[in-house]
Image (tube, rainbow, N blue to C red; front, side, top):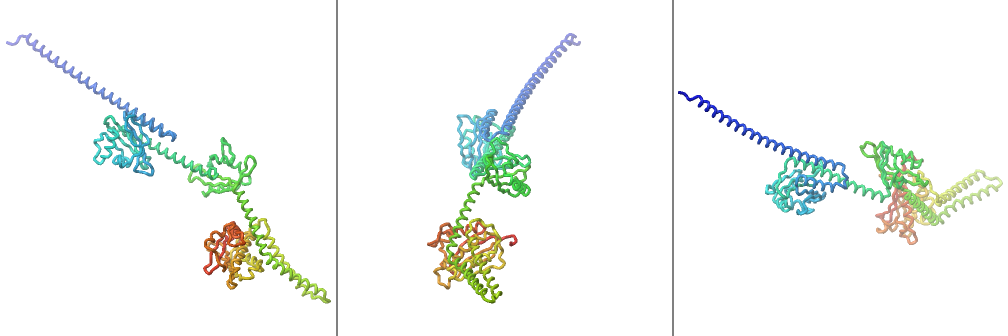
Length: 596
């Protein structure tokens, strides 16, 4: 028969108990696994949160560093870079950070300019040849690449020299970044290294380092630009101060004016005075306002350079002459004008004094010429006076007759008037030569002027002993000049030529006087003699004051003559003739207006 009922219940009970134990065990296992999973997840979350926090802290640090460098004064950049290197190393538990720069004129050299490392570490040399220490690394980084080295042993065979250098300075891991601005050339390297252990360089860290390298590069470029600007300003200030020049910059839209200390000194602006366009003009002499404003407007509209002379009135009432040179800033808005102002009062006074002294010297020279021509001038004046006397006596005889011939007397009186006019002309020319006051420029025909000079000199004993051959160019343009001064030059050249032939055989005593038009439009006058010529070593010195080849000469005639010609915008030269003798010539600018 079947099993007893209680046995069946017992079996079910045992089976149930076993199932319950199995389920309980499974549940326990499930709970344990879940708990472990939770712990792993929580640990992963904590690690992720930690990583995110560290990344956030790093990014915050980078943001702070970037902000610090934005408007940093140039003189603080070096110390700020080293402080930043220390902060980065401390934050990331690094041992060393170095910054190297390439000198402008030596691309094979690296200069160690900034470093942070433990005190006991071996310090790299301050000046390093790239080929001798880091040829492989430097080549890559200077080409714009980032070199990341987690293990020095992983360096390729071609980097054996680099490996030796890294080991020499104890680096086990290293990362190096190029320093450049925009698309410009790489001018330096920034590196971070670990000495204690090998270290991987995560992408987030490398990205942050790139930002740091860019911040440093921009700061150093700004520092260089500031240094170059300061040097340029120093040179400019030195040059302008040496030239006694004051700098100024006008902003024509705001009417504001920046001025240097020298400009304030020139115009007597106080140190705290705000200078404006109108305060500038307030210092200018009222009579010069119009021409200065016109000059400024012309420069602004045409873009041509500004040059303007004007007077200023100082607080004590004294007047100074200023010359201003300037130019408009190209393509700027607002419109600005930059320039310099120079006090030329002393120069003008010196020039006026020198001009007065030369005029006095020229006057003395003219008196000397008149002294040399005394006998010939006396003869020139005596001729018309003798003729006047003879004609007057003849007229007197005719009038004493019983039936005077009125026609004959009329002709005699006309001769007297003509001879009187001739004598008056000679005296007038002599008086003009001896005058000291300045003669205004006039439009002159040089052919006529030379003809007048020859008429004045025709009785001179020297000229009577030689043949004077004038060769006047037809259609010679007129010149604008001081008649007396040019006459003095021509007389001096003619007398010098005549004196040079004093001991020459009479057959060779010829003086050729030519006028001609030059290709450049100037008018040329030349006086050629057939004397002994000029010694080669004397040609360059002939026009020096007090240099003379004559025993009785003072050596001022030619010096004064050249000064006169230069003052007229011309030139004077001397040369030897191939056939013997010498030629003295001068040129003057042709008068561009109509002949008076």
